[in-house]
Amino acid sequence: MSSNRADVFSSPWAALPDVLRVHGFAALQPGPRLMVLGGVHGNETCGSLAIERVVAQFDAGQLALLRGQLTLVPVANPLARRQLTREGERNLNRNFRPSAAGQAPADYEARITDLLCPLLDRHEVLLDLHSFQSAGEAFAMIGPRDNTGTLEPFARAAEEGLLALHLRTPRVVEGWLDIYAAGLAQRARAGIAVEEDAIDFGRGTNEYMRTRGGYGVTLECGQHDDPAAPEVGYRAILATLRLLGMLAPDPQDVPPAPPQLLRLVSVTDRDHADDQFVRDWATFDAVAQGEPIGQRADGTLVRAEADGFIVFPNEEALPGTEWFYFARESERRLA
Image 1 (tube, helix red, strand yellow):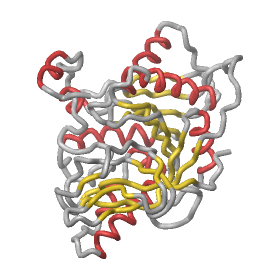
Image 2 (tube, rainbow, N blue to C red):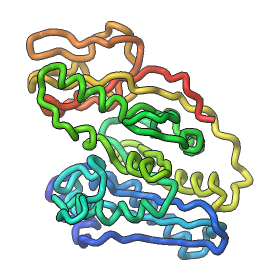
Image 3 (cartoon, rainbow, N blue to C red):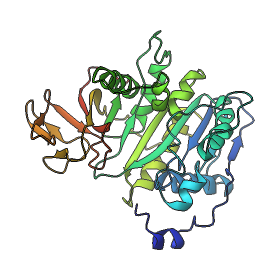
Image 4 (cartoon, helix red, strand yellow):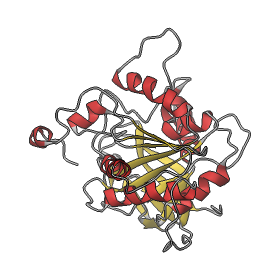
């Protein structure tokens, strides 16, 4: 979404206060505890619109919570939303953790995190609604497979996969934190200074949720300006509630079709401001092994390492940051 001054001043969120508006619904019957976030990035409005629609339907009695607890935060970053920019002072979905005891929050997003973390601690399932810059279809992102490693130990992959399946996106992507860590190691091998705690910058809302014993899925509802994106988010909230038995089932529902499951396998940094893509890429564009993807400032071609897919191409990446990710088909099954 554009963030020019005219858009900002005409935005319905231009006067949004620095307050988190939190909607809570608790059924008399115990059950799952679900939290839904929108607006973690200020220029991604579809999740906020989807949440507002669900809240209005609960308030009007058009939806009824059967069991458990539901918490919805339509705008998680008020500053970024007022500006209609991705970030306020920094990316809220990075280094997502509460401030250390006795330590003042370092920035605006740290103050938000200090409010959101205790909320997340009281829940076991997270649905985080986002959108993206380039053209493309909606997709979901999931965490690691069950493991007892040190990077991101996890024991609820089956539940997380089942949730992703029921969001009914054409594609699901796995492997985010593994590849983020691999990218840091790649920079270190290239002689680029990497801070000891740099891996924490790759941890967002879902990674935090997994450290608390829960699980979470990020839903990328579509392109920022896609008028269908709020509907994708709305349907995802209802699908999650029904999967968890918190809403009555839809009698017309049919079993979800298995999505294409992709695994991130590598990340390529932009080394120089003159590094350029050979063409405009969109997320999930297919490439063949050896096909040129970009050209370095010295004329060297960057080629596809195998048959696979471009993910998150960023033509505006700063030197020393992620230029694009590469994914291949995964053998994992969601259910």
